Length: 187
Image 1 (tube, rainbow, N blue to C red):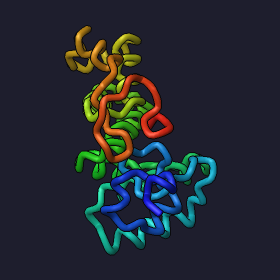
Image 2 (tube, rainbow, N blue to C red):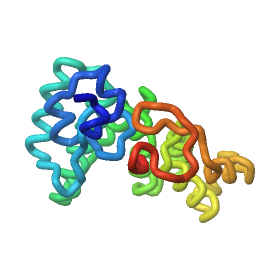
Image 3 (tube, helix red, strand yellow):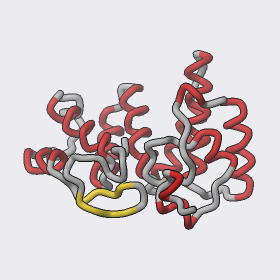
């Protein structure tokens, strides 16, 4: 059986699936190595324990850092507590060029009314081919939310974000025509 037969991205062949991946891997993450878990199904206590354990073995893994951040933020949101610990891991993962982390870190910064810091992260994720980031960049630029960021978001760039891109589709690079890549759009 191949990874494609079970719906896993091709990148999974190169990386071992960890307990952390099984517990909290994002289903739309282009770099995921497991099937992914929707936010409502994440058991945050179990996910945080699994990710902390896996990070002891591989402390510099941007993928595992992102997963732990995801678990911490969901845990905090469900309890109405601070998610700052999750932001630290999201920042580390984003700084290591993890595409999903760049986008979500930008979203979280936006949530905190830190648009000037959010814009470059979301743009980098968009330029890496993440569809949700491409759309969010256009939305934020057109909506004026990034007008004070100093980021140049010209019309050609915005049109480019809506043009069929050369996009990474679950571990491969190909041209997609705003139709499903490998069965579903990566978020």
